[in-house]
Amino acid sequence: MCPADRNDSDASTAARLAALLTTFSPGDDALGVSELARRTGLPKSSVHRLTGHLVTQGLLERSGTGVRLALKLFEIGQLAVRQRGLVDAARPYLEDLREATRNTVHLAVLEGTEVVYLDILRGPDAPALPSRVGGRFPAHATAVGKAILAFSPQSTVDAVLAAGLPRVSERTVTAPGILHRQLARVREEGLAYDREESGLGVVCAASPLRGADGTARAALSLSGWTNRLRLDRVAPAVRTAALALSRTLP
Image 1 (tube, rainbow, N blue to C red):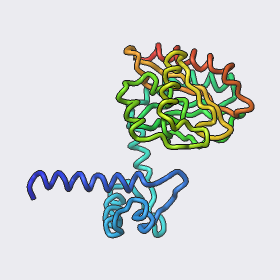
Image 2 (spheres, one colour):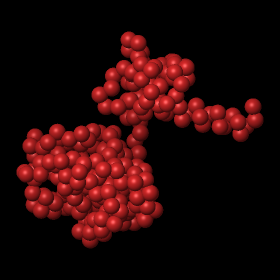
Image 3 (spheres, one colour):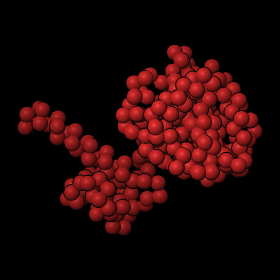
Image 4 (cartoon, rainbow, N blue to C red):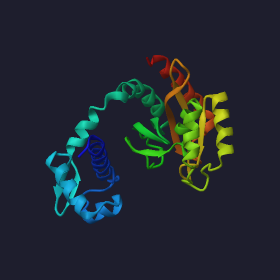
């Protein structure tokens, strides 16, 4: 095998292993070979062989006739410290917002066309939201996503638009022109809003955490019921928290 062929083979194997590990969804426990093959599009023989390797390495563990994610993956995740300092720095500000409003606060970063939630503090008066730490959501359908996009390079916004703007709820913004106008307003006010765009009955206000160069590194938000949370009242507190936190970041 020539080096080029070997590299292609290695890349293909890595892609298949990644597909198997990332096909698990929240709420999944053990998945069998047939279900893994269905979700990933891989042949059952390949799934059987590759899951065997992942079990040997401790990344999957057997449960009955299926396999599930092993705790070793959690241990590896805890070593991913790229955003650990940000979570630790943001926690007091998130706690203050939750205590003051009794609603749910989020800390998120942008990865590709989606936001990834780094920290979530759930408020006692807030709705049960589908967001979870480590979970993803389309950036254009969230306040945190729009807060980050408004202060990101144009190439980042273009990538989101090129990928399409899928409808998450009946109020999700799916027109590029409307999204552009929203982002322009976010740049003026330092605040982004989700008015039932990520889910009916839920509203949210977010503000970016900006670095010294002015670009957004992350965003924090406050979410609650549409008929209980007055965005005009809580938005200034969200923006103040984001500005104060931004000043502490290196």
